[in-house]
Image: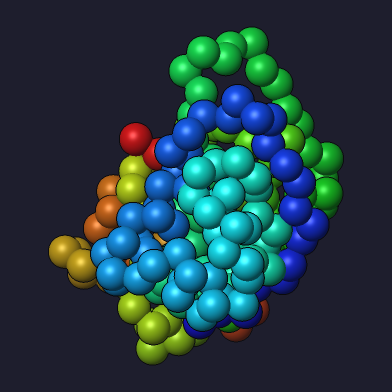
Length: 202
């Protein structure tokens, strides 16, 4: 599984919405494997109570814990970056200064998450440096609920999807697709390509 960089955890308010995207995905993935809380926590090297709080959306896990759960439950990124939307909140604003987004590193990507102060939102914008050069760099297709928009900032990429021929895109090109469809992206430039991604959870 891809090596992710840890970040500090912080607690959500006590009344945070139960069944957020992250909590739901972890709980459903564990149940699909037929694992108990104890077994899953042991495999991930975390406490049972910590896992229980994560599944019940009572705490926000640090990224090191998410990395372990991702590996054991075979979940994919970037779906784990998304928190559930809160329909009762309006008039919000967030911003990110150039180069000051949250860094997340995997085997195939270098992500910079943008506007991360809002923990409950429907869209996830991030800039990625594509390190992968061949689809064999991926263990499997990436799939996550919702839709995704990609705009190529630098270099040239090839988007591979389950139901279409590979699509080659250059700087200035863009694509919108169903992210539940298996997909992965590779750089076909001499240097790593850079793209802007916006993931929308439906």
